[in-house]
Structure formats: C-alpha cells, structure tokens
Length: 292
Image (tube, rainbow, N blue to C red; front, side):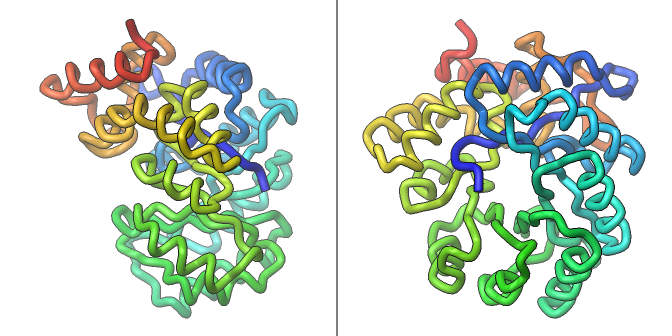
C-alpha cells in the first residue's frame, strides 16, 4: 500500500455550485509537484453527500485521467445504500482507480453484522482493493476492531482509514489484524503519532492547504524519524485544528479560496466559513508557511 500523505481532496466549485474542472486539474498538478503520494476524490472533504451520482463518477474519472498514474487514486465510493456503493465502486474500477474508500453506511446505523454483509457484498461484486473508512463522529456508525478483523479475511480489504483520533483503537486493530490490513490516519491532529507507531500514512484534510509540508512530515514519520516528523507537524498544528472549526470542508475550502487556488463555491446545506474564524485560519496558514 502507498505510504505517506494522501490528500482528501476538495471538489472546487463556482459560487453557483457548478464544478470548476480547471481548478480541479490545477489542484492535481499542485499535489503531484508537492510530493503528495495519493489522492482521494469524492470523500467527505470532496462533498460526496451533495454531488450527484453522475458527478461522483465523473470526478473520479477526471482525477484518474489527470493524475496519469503519478499518484495513487483511492476513489470515494461509499454510500449508505449497499447497491449504490457497488455502482460507484464498479464505475471507479472501470475508470482505472487504484482502490476505493468506503465509508461506513451513515444515518441508517447498521449493526456489526450489517457492516460485514455490506463490505462483503461490495467485495463480491467488484474486485477492487477496499480501504474501509471509520468516522463514527459523522456517520453514527462505529466499525469495531473485531469487525475489521472479520473483514480482513476478504482479499479486497487491504486497509482502513481510522478517523476516531484514538491511538489505542489503531493499536487494537493492528493487534487483531497484523499485517493483513494497513492503517491510515483519518485524523490530522494525531496522524504524526499514528504514523510513528506504524501506520502507513494519512488521508489528510490539512494536505489540501499545505501539501509539501504534510508530505515531508508523513515521509519522516513512516520512516521513523520522530524528531523531524514532530518538528514539521508542529508547524501544521494550527491547520490541524482550525480546519475543523466548522464542519469539514467549510474551513478548508475557505482557506484554498483565500489562497486563490479555488473559487469560493460550496453546496448547501454547507455554507461559507463564518467571519469570526477567518483570522484564525489565516494565522494557521502563516504558521504553516503557506501564507506570508
């Protein structure tokens, strides 16, 4: 599995809500030149709940085409309907994605047995490497370590994005699954420590704004260079916090718009970043060295 910084990519939009394909291509090129090793289109940060099914597939196809195998593409194909997740995953495979990121079904709160059946059905339908995605703070559904171990026997299940922010949770998954499942951080604030403990990398929101420093930090961390990794992570600490002052991707899209990387568009029910937080995000970007 890919090691290092993987960006949970925003979906650039005009104020009208239409997708800005030119800016999306420019972001891909920026990440290639910055050392980002992987890219996740249409994850939570890419506004997967508000893009249409057709747009979901088009964005993934576009990103695969523009990366031209220069980065690993892990397509966001999760849904709270198993049938829809299968459709998205099949489309991603057809488009040439390297793997898929499958968030636990949200809102309908399946049991652990339901989660096993959900991921097993996708694996049976589409032969594409799966990265499980556990973010109970957003989904109201927690994929337990014991359930991850049950799913690890499926050859398609290769990794998990663990976004609880709990180092102990990641340790438990590693203890139960061994080398069968790679672990990626889904929580920027604890990602450095998790990688120093053996995680393969991070699927990062912060990487949208400071891709080069995030790539350098992740590279140092996965290589076990704790001093360098923690030094670089200290410069990113403000972004790790301020990019979550409001629901992701509100702050990160505002930051990228402030940097003139994307237009200010975001789709309802999400709205632009509240004025009261602007100075905090600006200060965090200055701390990270992306803004002077």
